[in-house]
Image (cartoon, rainbow, N blue to C red):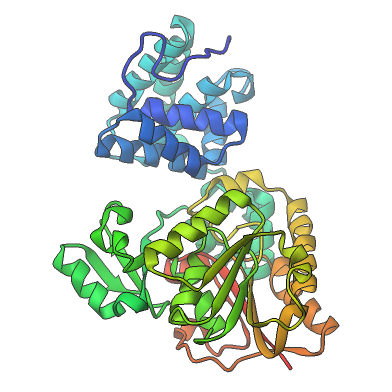
Length: 459
């Protein structure tokens, strides 16, 4: 079937719909390797869709990507010759339509089919529209019989039920056991909640909570992070007056624990090695009460502005942003320059799949070893910048042992002047105690991101 170069709005210049916007995003993600979250934001901004339609487009994009291998497994039964023979836009039209039929009970079947056929007509021709119509009607007729077959090995069955790569599921079963792996996968497919961090320099968490509740925002204290609040149904957090006033920052609860365990104090000199977009950097500065210096380094020059914009909005003056590869920082600063160092290392990101579902399909087993080599290299090069008695925190947003416990264990064995430090002020939830100097947060434990944090002291 020939590809149609037009956008999903079609040759006739039809106004964008939720499904046409979702189709554009899904097709470009597949063809160009674009990040779905960035591309979706750009597409919605240009589309002019009303808020309910924008919400549906968002659901279709993330839901289809989340359930991709399950959708393809069942769709393949209805497409002669398999999905691979279809043009990308046709394949993704069938995928997002199947997602609605299988996972969205509130959308009528006839609406799904009619909209898919109309999109096929606008982008292609009558033959494609007929194929789409026939395929989706066959899915509806046989939907009740579509099930993961019995007798599959546990990893393959779980990978199909919860739509994850089988190789990744096998790793999690080996490490955490089948029951925990099932909970991790299910949590990855749940909608992420919204959490914010109160800026202690502009009011307490309790004061912010009262303000938000008085405005009708459903807000509650985080059970995980001392400065965190969980918001439900708040809409765009960036449109809240408290955001513009610098009273809060959008940040995941797990991520908030990093600065808590780093425990920076007023007057200190702190290095944040991989700082963009600046959430942990600004949290560090807030805990220091904007007294001291926080050097925020990132390898990408265009991200320096993100850090500066956040600092300005929050009224923080102690942050110094610089563009540098973390592996070159030892050439920028004298040895033993810092009281605290945070290395929030580049990682596979398998703890944030619920926010970035593309990750589970984009990564391959070899990526873990490749990224781990970078992590070890950075850690090896920056540790000498810490003063004796100082604290180094190593963190990632992944749950892979090689990137986390194994990396820290190897570093400690090679550098006896460092040791795990358990002397912390922050009160951790029962599930994370006793604190041994390292902690792993799994995605299902608190509804937050999967995270790893290690606290080390230089003797």
